[in-house]
Each structure stands twice: as structure tokens, then as C-alpha cells.
Length: 390
Image 1 (cartoon, rainbow, N blue to C red):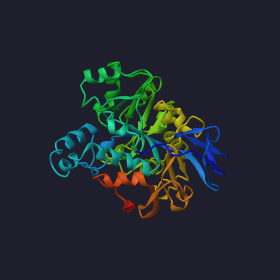
Image 2 (image 1 turned 120 degrees about the vertical axis):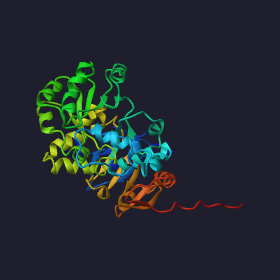
Image 3 (image 1 turned 90 degrees about the horizontal axis):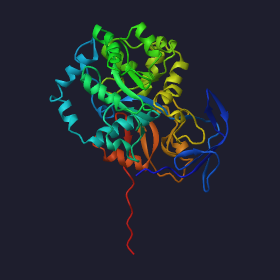
Image 4 (image 1 turned 60 degrees about the vertical axis):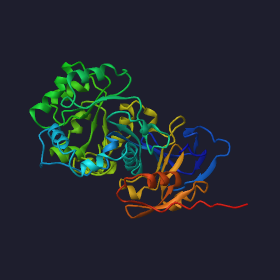
């Protein structure tokens, strides 16, 4: 069980705060940031480092990240075609064997994938599997949400029932207009006719929506979740986030699962910046303030008193280059020299994409117990317990 870390007093670091960095002390206790040092807080000098809030992945299917990236034709007109292709192969290999792993192992790998690249909060699009909300799960998973899969794989009745049963202050997610054909182009109006376009509606993908529908949605919905690498892989096209943002829509970034995405969250950032020629400010907002607003947890966008103590130190797009990842005030994985600044945290040597790391021993135990393996991660054997005879 990974309980929140002991209180910390971090000094001399630069703190990301409302689009700028300032130098101030940061204190944690019971897994949250507090406004003054707690009794017995460990003092850690991080002079020369910059601290950021943990990243938010606004769309993932956590139990699908152990599958290989898969498609069965070069380009799809609509993601539901891919879904039908995929469903017809679930009883063939390698999918049959991969489906047979225990649920905990499958969702754990999804959580670990996110944590290793600096994501500390994930929106899972699917059933709220109980293992994802255990205290020892690698990342925070949004609890107050509801969802429908899509207008293709759910009936109209199921979509309406899901939407109407969702509290108005909870986000309601649906894959919508995930295609470039006429079916995708008509889905927004179909959803609106069902009475399921409202202030808590969050559209995932939205690739096939017209300019007119985007302008209409902008007056109503809670936001759009953009998944560029999945969209390019399946459809050869992604949503024009400039158009969405130009209409005043909050846009969040999602990684989807490795079944269709190009790796982890860092790949979405890189793809968004380069392949889609989106500027850094749009990406920053899509992984911070706008994501936090869409999921209803604005405190995740800051490192102020009351926020979760989810802290990234000198975060990079390539996960092996990340200096330190703290979740709930507990250092989870980092460069050996920085992890050494927390002498009471027991760690195990590891390599991530060929880069030396130290990883918290409890997380290392989970990794060793998991029947599935995270690509690019090697964790040394756990230290042997000592037994004494008296």
C-alpha cells in the first residue's frame, strides 16, 4: 500500500504558477500541498530545479495499454469501422491471450504508462473498475464522471439513459464524429436531437464535425478532448483545434490507449506541436488549465495550498529525461541524484528507455508482481529481507 509520503518542505526551487515561475518554498502534508511546514517535515533543497503540477491525460482506456497498436486497413473513413474490425479479431491471437490477463494487471500497466511520462491524473473512458481507485494505483483516476461509448456501439436509449443519469456538475464523455465520412459529419446533430448536448457534454475526437456544428457546440458543451496520434493513425486526419479554440471551446489533450495511440502522453504533445503545427501555448493549456476545468478539478492546475501534492520536477516530453515525479507527496521515480535527496524513501535501481533511475520500492514491488511488462522499463531485483535468530 502506497500511503501519502511524509511531509516535505521543498526550498529554493522555482514553482510554476499561473503561466510564470516564481521562487518560493513548497510544503506538503497528507498527500496535499499546505501553506506552512508540517511538524517533522523533511527539508529538501531543489535549487536550480523547476516544479510543475502533474499532467492530466483527458482520455485513456486504461485496460487496453498492453495491446499492440493495431489497424487492418490503411485509412478508415470512420472509427466504428476499425471497431468492427477489432471486435472480429478478439478471439484470435495475440488478442485472445492478451484479453485473458487479470484486470488488475491490465489497468496497472495503463496507470504505469501514464505515471512514467509525468501524468498523475487520468480520465478513464469506460466502466469505473474498482482497482483503479485503490490507494496504491499509480495515478489518480477521475471518479466523478459518466460516459457513453459512441452512437455506433451504444443504442440511442443507452446514450440517453447515461446522459440523463449523470449529475449536471459531472463531465459526460462520448466518442463523437470520430471519422471523415457523412456518418461522422451527422453525429453531432444526432446527439443534439437526443437531448444529450449540454453544459456537461465532453466530445472526444470531434474530427468530422463541420464548422457550423463546432460554432453551435461552442455555445453549449463543456469541452473537446483531442487525441492527435490516434486520429492520424486511424483516419489520416485530426480535429482542427485552432478552429475549436477560436470558437471559445476548452480543449484538453488525451492519449487514448496503445491499441491506437503512438506510445504515451509525450507522443501526443510532440504530435500536437509538430505534425499539427499547434503552438506551445495551446498545448500547455490543453494539458493543464483547460483539462483541469473540463474534468471539474481546477486545483490540479496549480501548486497551491489545497492542491494534491502531484509534482513534476524539470519535466520533459521524453519520459526518460524526466527528473522526478512525485504523487501524493511521495517521490515515485526519478534521477538517482535527486532521489538521493529523499534519504528516508527506500528505492530500487531501474532503467527507463536506457536512462538510469531510482524507483520507490513499493512501486517496484507492484511492477515485479504484474504479469505484464512495461516496454522500456527494467527494474532491478528487490532487496532480500533479512531474518535474524535470537
